[in-house]
Image (cartoon, rainbow, N blue to C red; front, side, top):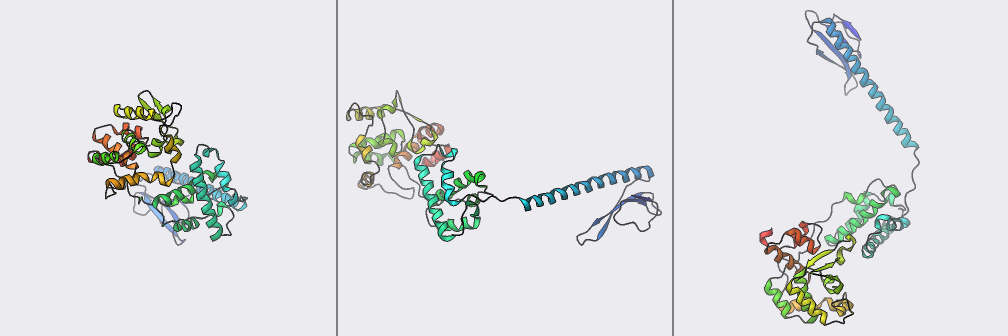
Amino acid sequence: MILRDTTKNNQKGKLMIYRRKHSPYWTAAFYVKGADGKLIKRAFSTKTADKEKALDIERELKRVTQELSEKKRFEDFIISTAEKIKDHVIKRPGMPLSLVWEKYSSHQSQSKRTERTQNTKRIVWNRFSRWLKEKYPQINTINEVSRDIADSYLKTIKGKSSSTYNNEKNSLSSIWHILTVEAGLKENIWRLFKSAENDSIRYRDFSLEEMRLIIANSEEFWRAASVIAYYTGLRFKDVVHLRKSQIQGDYIVLMPAKTKRKHKNVNIFISYELRKILDYQATLIKPEEDYFFPEAVKQYGKAAFNSVFGTILDKCGITENARGKVSFHSIRHTFVTVNEEIGTDRKIIQGIVGHGSPVMTGHYSHDLKSI
């Protein structure tokens, strides 16, 4: 540090406090390196003519400069040490592609997945691994799958429906997420891509006149199933597999087939009209039989059986329009819409139909007052 009263040439790189001729004030000056590497002078007036105060400023500048210098040396040390560690670190071999599904499916987080869900993810993984083997035979581990490779694969399924595209992307993302630690993955590359916008056509509800036509033109099982769906909002599969043991007092208590992995029951109040239908249906089956529709349970899933409702709609002249598609699922939309129209709280409707959020229930409502 230099303290002087003259304007002689300063020693570059040092802190200085000096006073110019004919000036009552002291000036603090220091030099810094510019972008071109040359030293540039920086100076400011201390606004004091008191030499002792100027010395205090000098000492404070020195303290700050020393702290910055020490901090810079420490940061340089950390960076250089990290680089050395990086150069000598032993790289993990990565997880072979042949072990990916085994490691993923056996992970504890997958124990609650249904067999159907796991089978879907397995099909997605097998399809991707076959594509990978064909297009990139040099890739042997999951760690070598880059973002560019993922992008290349997703482009092969761009032409499929948005739901198919999103299901494949999300299934692969799930695998990467679960294996991040065990396989030593740097990032989940599938999360870097946006999901496809929903291009599916929404189902519409049935008007009351259409419901009357459906019931009038249906026979046996289909008539009873349509009425039950109208009063409960149940999906087709849950209607087909409805059981007497699910009747508990004034409520139907069941776990919807589609959401069983959530282990959450729905409770549906049995209205007077619905009770008459259930009591009558119980008289048509054997006392020891639990299913209300045992024959339909046997036929469920067969194309010929599932297509019958479409034939009924054709007979009634009920077709899809600008408001959406029509199928048995439309009765579920009708249930939500009718309840919205009569003022039932949406959270109550949500609980009955088993939706995860009131937003989803809102998608089922076609009541203009609820929009």
